[in-house]
Length: 124
Image (cartoon, rainbow, N blue to C red; front, side):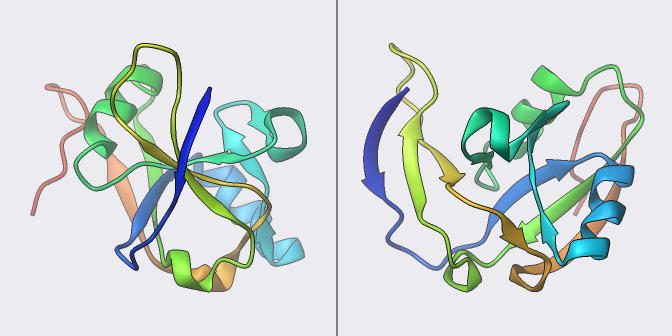
């Protein structure tokens, strides 16, 4: 992974959570899952996406699931460092990564998201 730059704006960032993982965050007040099946302690950061990236991320990594929770995160309310990085060499897109636990108070909206026949599509 290539570190590029620290996040500079206050635009929301997004994370896809399994419903049971999000629910368990309320026991401690913080969310500690990096990505599907891998904790923050294992990976070192929490994978996030922009609004433009979230559908592709959902279809790439969660295409076999029917339900997710879309977390809308206020990056300004996250105490840990948020870095914008390339996930792999040769990838030009930058993705936000949170280098620490996500306080549930930094999540300003949750949306139960159901996959339809065409895949994960956000309907507005």
